[in-house]
Image 1: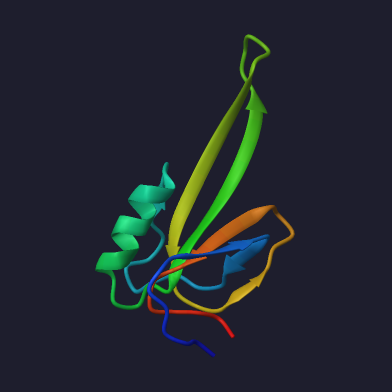
Image 2: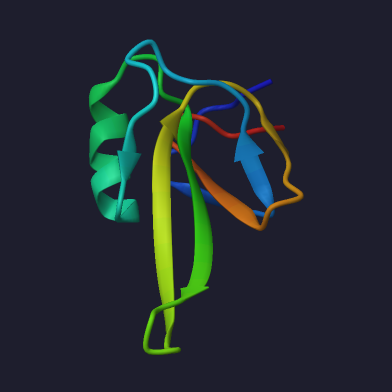
Length: 91
C-alpha cells in the first residue's frame, strides 16, 4: 500500500520488485536514475547496486548501477538500496 509523500524515501537493503513499462534502464548515477523515474508514469522508484572489483593494477574500483523500477519494495540479499519516488510511501 502507498501513501502520498513529497520527497524521495531511502530504503536501505531493499529493492523494488518490477520493471517500468520502458523496460530495463541502467544509469551510472542515482541522480540520473531519479530524473528518468520522474518522467515515467509507472516508475515507483529507483534501485541501486554497489559493486567492487580489482583492476589489473590491483586497485579496487567501486561501481554503482541504478535502475528505474515499478513495484513493491522487498528485502534485498545483495546490498541493494532503493528510493521511493515522491508521491509514494510504502506503509
